[in-house]
Length: 122
Image 1: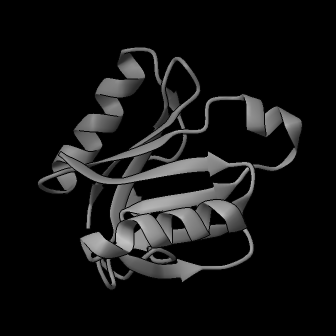
Image 2: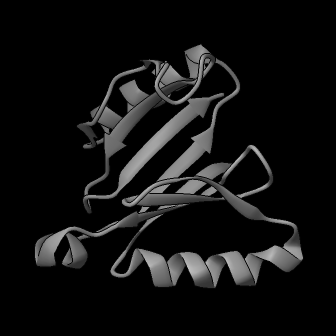
């Protein structure tokens, strides 16, 4: 069902240390990261993404990012269309995301509470 989850965190360094340590016994490792984010999960497939919250406004607002795995590109497009019809706000239509990977295909919506919701066919 889930492909990955993203969380806004107030202190990226502290959260990174916590999740690296807590998830290591489960076989998860630090993957892609820089000063503003860290991806943790199976080697070469981070599934928990931590994002540094910027400023008080960002830290207080909804910060969850949920990505649901889709079976194919048609399902990604259907997710986006149905979500818009049900009151979601466009945050990126169905299409390739080459900056993520050569085969990443996704669509993004903002739900009624401001959370970023994605359907992805990696």
